[in-house]
Length: 237
Ligand SMILES: Nc1ncnc2c1ncn2[C@@H]1O[C@H](COP(=O)(O)OP(=O)(O)OP(=O)(O)O)[C@@H](O)[C@H]1O
Ligand SMILES: [Mg+2]
Image 1 (tube, helix red, strand yellow):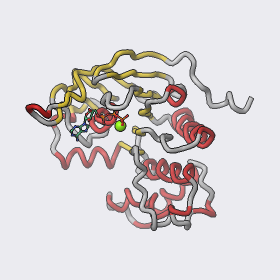
Image 2 (spheres, protein in one colour):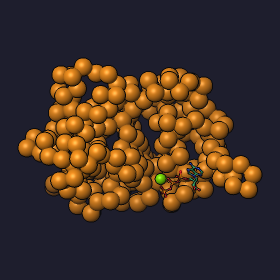
Image 3 (tube, helix red, strand yellow):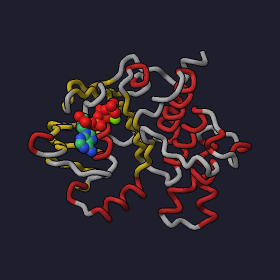
């Protein structure tokens, strides 16, 4: 599904040049749950923006479902995002004064989905991440951190994406709430077979993924199966 070949990303020029990615190679199959792990400034968000068709690489190629997206126009990229990709950003980007339901509906509004279908999809997505129906009409500034994060995940799910990209989704949460959010991702992967790419600098968070790609200074330094995976059910046994 995802094939990244010798992708480089350079920001700026001259004295202000930054080599954010220095030639990365990997493939991710449909249904994988991969963590991309590395220290601050190692290129994780840059990579997520490229995987999410929000930005183009400076060099190299990126094939998504067999299509070379590094060659597409901005409009074609926008269509791919609407159709296939759900984003959970490093900052949640919820509208604080809008209701939970309204926040979850937003991506479909932009995509021009008819009203009834929008609302049905948003309700289903919110329920699937365990947000109680009694909260659907609360404003998002009236929610706990964990609930806000679940709304952000629901919002990433409303367009029924095959690929979910999450950048530090537990960065602002306490450990227990973070665990609940990570279990939500594990369930979306295990039960609904969605491909998940989770970006983090914490090994405890990466431990929930089946595979971990380590990046450092814009390069992949390690890529392998996570043998010490935290499983969905280990907490309940
Ligand atoms: N829009 C930009 N313009 C110029 N430089 C940028 C831009 N975005 C990122 N960079 C630089 O590229 C490098 C990689 O940044 P990136 O945001 O990908 O790191 P990161 O691994 O996500 O870090 P963090 O864990 O802090 O979020 C950094 O040196 C950063 O300063
Ligand atoms: Mg980042």
